[in-house]
Length: 103
Image 1 (tube, rainbow, N blue to C red):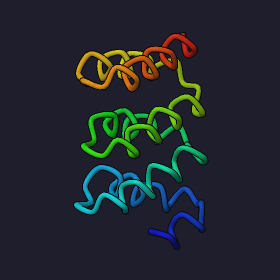
Image 2: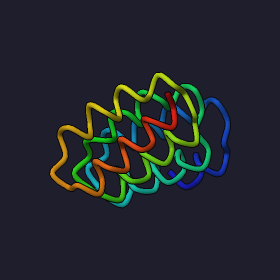
Image 3: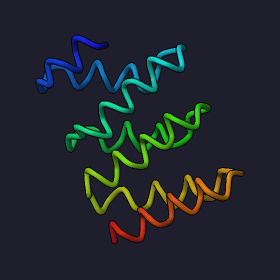
């Protein structure tokens, strides 16, 4: 994953998205999410939206920030939907704040 992130080529993004959504190791998903937070591409919107339901809070926080950085108004719906499903009030508040910024 480290090498793919360093490449930052369009060809690397599908593998980074796959790691974010499917790797069993929390730290791998966290690294993928952190990379996408700093370097999101339009193709990252849906994987970041899906990552909002990750079991690891740091992955979710990176996903929120990545969607904010991406600034795609279409992400507001997934943020609001995810906010309704989390028990952490702070996370829900952050999701709703970012959704409001994107509208």
